[in-house]
Length: 303
Image (cartoon, rainbow, N blue to C red; front, side, top):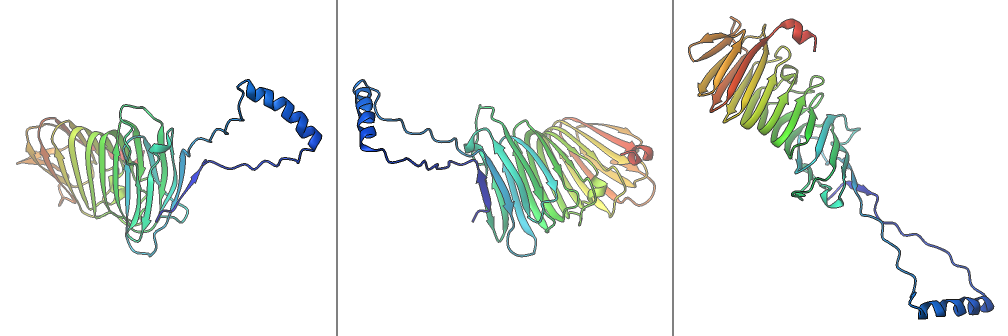
């Protein structure tokens, strides 16, 4: 079942033709026959209109419980935001080639918006502007290519999410507190990944795998509940910003070069604050560089 409306498709135009009187018919024929004899031939078929290049998405699975949302984009720019006007997934997908428009599937389990054709070496224009509704959901997001992807989880009831960034620039934030904090957020990246306002996002368990590229994580505020982060870096760089009034502990292992600012080194890691840690971080590294930064409270309040 699909819940998608496609605009811009071919249309049929009906043209009325008056009845030609006999004398006028003879005159028309006397002109047309010589033209046909000269090779003009019959009138050409009308040129078909171009295929659709935009799909409008307004998907709402039946029921009220948590559902799955799958967004898979092989090429293009994504803008994902909260507030879908009553639908679970709402918005538009545009492409310079109709073959690059996504397929939309809706069933009782959830919604899938999938672009399953890879343009290869071509450089098409593809853009998705989508919004997610307030229904409890589990999200899988897979983006490829070098475009800038913007994702805002503010105000959502996001139970868990898995994000794969392969080669692009993924910018994730919570513009406002969620309806419910996610139990688990798993991100895997090859490229540039920036995550803002993790404190506001209220993620209980965060897993980040940096295969190659740069990852920047910013707490930007107090934790709403204790949290655990599992940060794994095979190669590349990682920058972690935590407000200086947050009680946090890092347990590190690996060969990466770790530079700290405002953290206190301990046996096997670093500490921030003297009270019982509310943020526990397990850091496993291969090659690369890590920055642990304690941000001033004034900087946090200015955001």
